[in-house]
Image 1 (cartoon, rainbow over the protein chains, first blue to last red):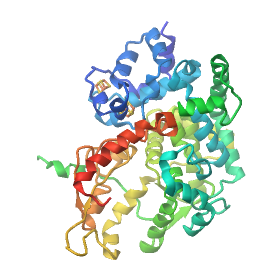
Image 2 (image 1 turned 45 degrees about the vertical axis):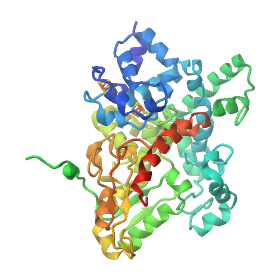
Image 3 (image 1 turned 90 degrees about the vertical axis):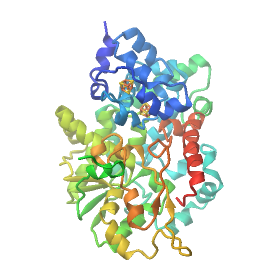
Image 4 (image 1 turned 120 degrees about the vertical axis):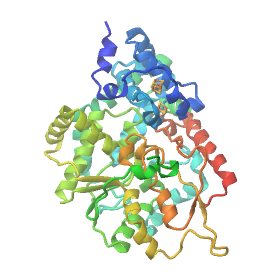
Length: 227
Length: 255
Ligand code: SF4
Ligand code: SF4
């Protein structure tokens, strides 16, 4: 009984995020995700505080927990000191832990997030790196970005950066020693396990959906990223 | 005593170290504004005569991945602990964070350790097992803009151009927009708090411009982390940003 609720209760973000919600809706009023989708943080908080595992499981399988933009505007404004954004963090972690993230369209997209920022961290030492931000992936960056990228060797030198060099400074190459430290930290703290779990469960889901799954920007990635 | 609404910001002040900073770089600023951080370091070193250390060994804080629901909190806290260890090794105590999201996450890590001390202990052990490193927390942790705010009067004395129309002498109209994670998570950590952040508005005032207020001044820009990272979800970000741009237009701002 209440196994999922108990699991959530082990997460310090859940402990911090859920005091007692009286359903005022202030969080929804200020929420940028609620403005552009049918997401409603008030309903999420009201649902989890009922401690009903069936309802929590429905949330873990839903698109809604993936709609939040983590701006934390709700933290400032909740009159009861709840933080819907923190509750969402705990629900997302549990959704991946339980494998239920593949049950929703939005949850499945975590594979595309993993294969971009997740992999970039361990490859470059940065969440985002100019070599990977092309106009196919980010067309809204427009022609100036396209030109800057195409001429990045010379432009970044003119701007005084350390692009791909071993010295300190902007866009420097992160040393192998630092990358190794990151990998060891990921191994030690559950980061590697989390990323591997996303790959493994996504592989099963892709088979079920009959979409080609291998690695990198495969068909499944393209489907998740674009549609 | 009643305090006037536009002076509420003065209730929220914070300690900002005077010199000797360890600089924490930003993934987003390095890529999309590649000259910005060097300019910042140049102002601190050469205009203000301050000591700021730029470390080749630091990495991302993992913030974008963390706020996209990808990385466990334990991983993020341990990566941040490694940055603190690097700061200690370099002989510094004051951490200046370039990125607003990183700043929020560094503060959140320190607050988590304060309220759940067992998480600090676990982080120490994990960092040591992974890298052999140990760390002390910074004596002072601020965002890069806080330092500019602290020295705004000295910068005003040195600046070549004030925020004034050279032809008419009128102040230039300026809108500001503060990254959500600067003060919405921990209002006491931002100059002016969450409702009346003064860290940029104070620069406009000091440098001769005119602040222009607008209804969505405290609203999120819509970055949304995973929402922006996925092309399928990017309408979230574009819609929220467009709303702000539409609101600014009739105000004819310069920024
Ligand atoms: S603002 Fe707080 S109390 Fe009101 S609905 Fe949201 S979480 Fe509940
Ligand atoms: S953190 Fe999430 S729930 Fe809270 S206001 Fe931002 S988008 Fe909405």
